[in-house]
Length: 171
Image (cartoon, rainbow, N blue to C red; front, side):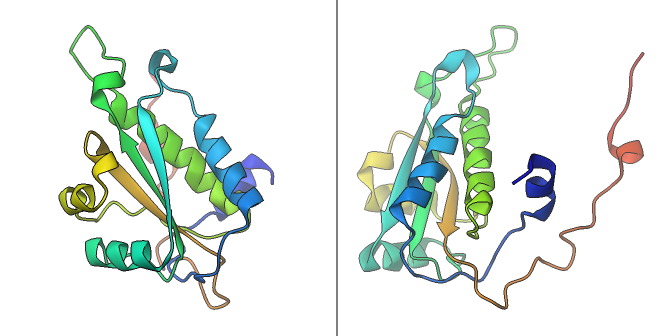
């Protein structure tokens, strides 16, 4: 898909089928995440793919935003492995992981699947259920699935402020 069309057409899909995702599609989605740039190429993130009834049950306890999916991608950032800006000490682990997450989000749509960037979840409880996530800042869960026939973008999805309001040129 042409990039500008992809970013214009992608929306937060809140009605998904719980059918398994084809392995080839999932691999391409994960590869898109791995291709994301990170500060000094430190790659301070981790991805977890959760499937199966038990994981779906656990996730439904940690967030109400599972949308019927049967596959979930969790993105975490490890500040101890990230580049830090020397001028003010800004650690960019969460920024790097957000770039990875954005690649994943767009790749999901490019594969003809639906998802939503879920940020509303109980991260401390998630770490209790999945101790391998303990050392990470958990930034996103992506429920992934085939799009239900009656799914549609939210009412305000296509309303965007214009360039003149959002961009300032400094000469």
